Length: 397
Image 1 (cartoon, rainbow, N blue to C red):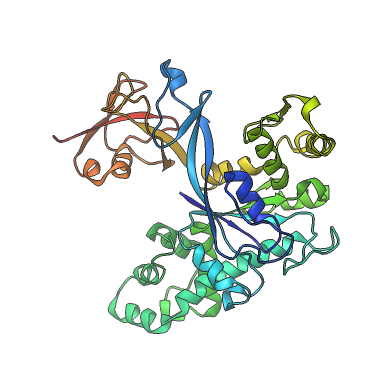
Image 2: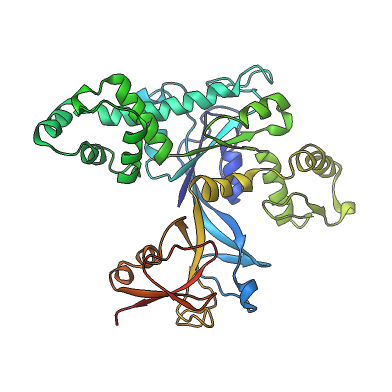
């Protein structure tokens, strides 16, 4: 799974990325610090089934800490977006191209209103962050529409005359953008388009592009710099229709993760609090900084919001659930004896056969049945997977 970290310049995207991954990224107080996309790995938290088994696990594609399974996801921090990026302004063409394979987007918004539309610092609360939300929607919509528009009239007319399906025309044009046929069917249904394809004009194409964006590139709002934002602004942005919004303090998360790595505090990403290990060893600036985070971030928001953004994107917006395939349904091991070796994220509603195909095409093609290891019940191909299921796939020999 790939999550794109997006937004205009100078809002804290690279700070968010570094806080989530502890991977190095250039961070500075000026636009277009990020030129080439930064790639890194962050982790989603979920309860590990080994707690129910009563034996420690041996993860291969993930990790486990004190009963919390840490499932890796890839993050992509791209160049800042400015208005009219879809026309090539700023680094727009590069920005949009980098997002082709993203499954979801976390839009980092400067909730303090201290950067204008170009990412230039301005007095706090002087810029309305809602403007940034709407412009990013518009930029992605125009990007998708620009791809559809190329040769559209000819392709639409040919599909109309030959009785072809316009969904297939759209799919062929958007190949490589991570837009599935299911996304296209849903978008056409919701866009209220004329029955005749040749009657789709500019407004209809924009409406189609917008609904395609909503289905294929769902966006979460990271309300960054929440510690210095006005409460009314946080409240207004937290209730935008169609959005999951999380107050975020990426700079505080980065500071806490670095402090934890240095042994100064006890803190895990997503915790609602932290513990100073030895106050006597802190310098005055370090103590002042941690006191600020405690008072203005942890007490106020019950966390920095960074981990919550990642998990909301995966578990709420994309509606993914963790499942655990094993070879031995009794010991929950693979052929090498590793307990609960792998975690797979699958769409809620996926079946046992879907899981088989996700592991390997041959498993899906030769699927016979599966075993729910928790209940020891044999289930068929249409068994709907539940969060935390441990499954054994039985195939033709």
